[in-house]
Image (cartoon, rainbow, N blue to C red):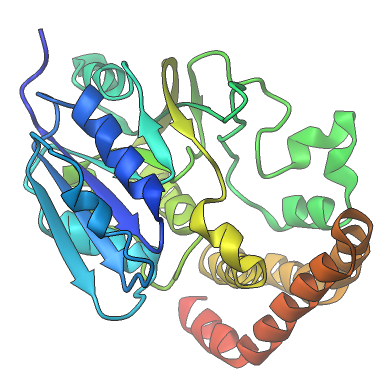
Length: 318
């Protein structure tokens, strides 16, 4: 028997095209009776992807927030959460699609009394080849970033120094530091108590920061292996690879200023600004040729142009 609807799904859309329609169709097919409302927050898309909403005859009430500019992922998520009065929130990427147990399993898990201190749930995400994606991560540290920048975490015996838990096959339910933001199932009271995602993170690391703050508040994150959803991966950010890398590096530095000690921040700055540009340039040229190298160099150019803002915010955070 399906549970009473006490869940709102928040989807941030930015030029997602037909992926948004497929995502909404999957909620129609697998979320009926479990979802109170769908909230789509559009970050000034120009691809007419919002027209896809009209193509879906949906039994679940759907609300749309139209931003006239791209306010970033964290801000858009918070906008959606502000309209919710449900017990649970699911932040779902438009390049994801629900499957049969995607909602029922985390709902049942979080509703059990013995899991009252679990604040965040993730589930198995399957890619286009049917493989389980390695989506869970450890909380970052400056040493982990250094190992990754130098390529050391690629060695089998040093994979535990990778931020992402790439050495684990994700085939079993496990408590983890952080689940991926593409399917981020969270208790609404916890989300509101922590004032949602920190909007300092335009995109990337907002779920890492939230998960870390939730852990400090006494809540755990659990990855459920008995439920799955589809996730294409990369999403619309694949369209702008240089911008994607810039925001990833920018958010990494801001996260470090917010949560690391002074010595760790210094190491992070050395790694990010001096060591990693060289290693990334070499790997980019070897992997994708001149075009990939151009994207990498452009990302670091944007990072350099934004460094004053980052340092100013960093001093405020530290």
